[in-house]
Image (cartoon, rainbow, N blue to C red; front, side, top):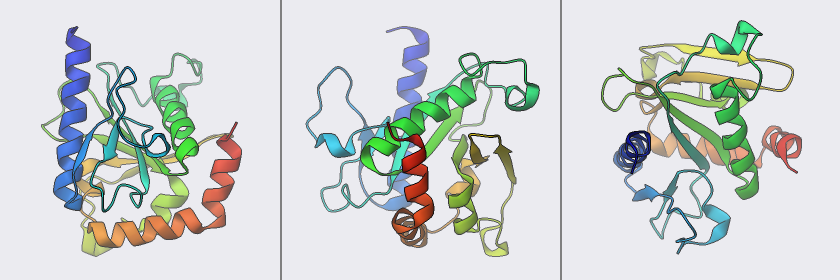
Length: 192
């Protein structure tokens, strides 16, 4: 296994543990090369809930990326195309996968030098707005970056801030978002 694949697998295992700690349910890396033993309708992304009581209810399609050259300036630089701008490429992959299973796209990104268990988390801006993570009770430590273009609207935050919201509350808001016309609009826009 190459070093980059090893780092990617380690990152996915780490994110699985973060979600298990946060939700109280079991998570795992999505098996590669056709070794799936879960229902295909819930197995897009890199991390899935494997708890039988919650797997169908879990609302996120989680994509994990570890990239040494993660550069947010590419989002507003204008000289980088979609294929060379890693963040937009990652988000497109995440969104395409999430639409297949009608779940909310959630992208965990990490680069070299970040402290342990720390990631950048991207979610749709309209979902972030409903979560209201800027409420004082969540104590947003790092803040949020909003990216908006003709075709994308996403909020990027630190994983510590993301996991500060109690999971039960997060889950209720996520279920309401999925039932809302805004999510249906997102699915229609990115569906093939």
